[in-house]
Length: 374
Image (cartoon, rainbow, N blue to C red; front, top):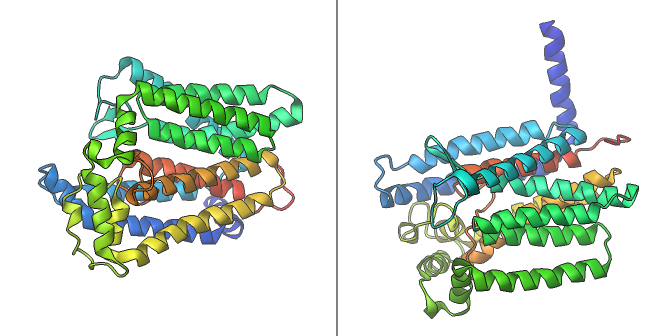
């Protein structure tokens, strides 16, 4: 019996190896290793600012979450497309329920935001897991509306609208912006008319103005981006200084100084630490790895026979690429601060596990299955 089980396990792994996009898997592995390297550089400064005894407190936790993310990518990428969709739907439903629970019953806040549930020393942010689940659900609804005539578009708008409302109540304007852009893109790619897209963009602009007028925290970030003299811009200024100090080849491992001056150097501004210590060479490599995953995923998605899997993979790839773009854009001062992490590189347990879920689903949908419709 054990021999049969062992043979079956070997067969599953062999099938996975020959069907998965190995280049994307390699790119993910490199991003995780780069994240560990940069965590090693930034952890002592972050621990010192919080008066922690262990200078590598954040490194050890980052290592644990990175390991869990790597395992989740591997395991989830083995799923059939049907099971991948079910997992995404489960992630969406659980995230929405937890977000409602947080708003109604949880008192824990950080920076005037209610986004987390405390589990011992770990704080879980359910909204991170909302994003991949939402992309897959919307893809399924849009395709089914074309195939069966169900009001999938209206339901997709309703699910998106409810998710955005919960995010804004936290408040989390950055994540709301991310799912909004992803939603518009996946809606357009699905073949919806320009009238639908134009109407939604108009509503988004009106909604953004409303958010600006009613959310002081969001308005402050926009104001400081447009007029730096209107508020505290210490972190973004230091991040840009780190990038400038690094130049092409960087100051060398451990030789960065700005990382000790940026409170969020190990999370939102880890890209600037990479620039200061390892120069633009590493920065270009990081950007290239994200681009490689996104482009290869889109290419493989274009060859899929199942339209739901095709649109789901496209949405997940765009979600990953947009999150990396937003984080890097903040570091380069081309967009306002959003509090968004750099996938697989920034410190953050919820973010790391959610990115593992996202990429695991992406690899599951884009695996080669000739003649299979799931």
